[in-house]
Image (tube, rainbow, N blue to C red):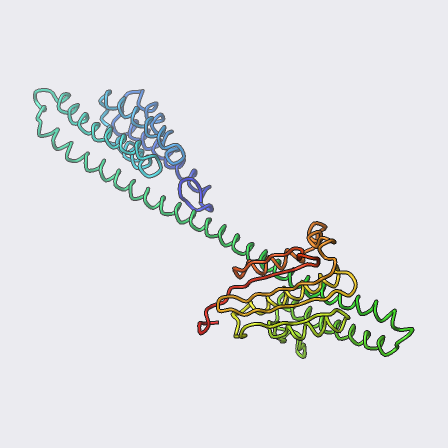
Length: 405
């Protein structure tokens, strides 16, 4: 849409129409001057001077109406018989400045137009002389011309209202498009962050378990073939589980709902009920883990169970990577009326290794756990334990018992 409130496709039409209108007005003025009234030689100059501003009545409404009004005053002062025809240009300029110009210019032009009606009536009365100087003639002129001025001004106001409505609609559509684009961008960023957290949790935990089993199997292979075989089986099971999780995660990026026979795409997400399986998997890799439950378990709201599982998974993975040889780990799951508390503590050297360095060098473990807890309105604290070791504690809010899960 252009500045006049017209659609973009009509930008080239408007100047052409205004130019044609101005040219037509000038040609008609010449025809009246030469053929009908045979006015003085100055009339074509006035006609041209009054016609040119009409070509810019939309783009420059205020200068256009000022120029037309000034020429109209000159025409009125000369007493041309064709003053009625020139008045049509005044009405057109008044309409244009009301429709496309500022409000102060519209009101000023209206007042000037009404004043011009009075001056025209007075001029007719005075020039008629004693024989025709009847005030009734002037009153008739006023009664004819003032309604024309008011009609031109009213039409301009209607056009102005439509232009403003079009501009408001265009602005509203533009703002809606910008808001929609921002919402889509935010949704995409949120989804990417979620996928990044899931991939980190799956890959980091599974690879850590596989590396630990591979190292143990390599040393046990020469002395205890059964232990090496068990390590290889654990590596295979962990790899298959990680592959299934990756297929399920990457399924959100597909356009379809999953390939036939792809059971991983339909598998449920892990939850707090899978913590025993997680502990058994980590314990099989050689880590001494104890699972302690306190309170009465109950159904969790959507997402809370997955968050609890991923926090425990990441914390146990960090223990395997940073706690050193043979640490003892305790996973405490405590249920209360208003929250689910998770505490993963070990007696290794994680405090000395400064687990927070992982984030400093580009890791996402602690950051991912903190983001998961904050998304649910919970808290996450990490730090060294008194007397050695490291502790990760997360608190996730829960609805009161008996409420909607």
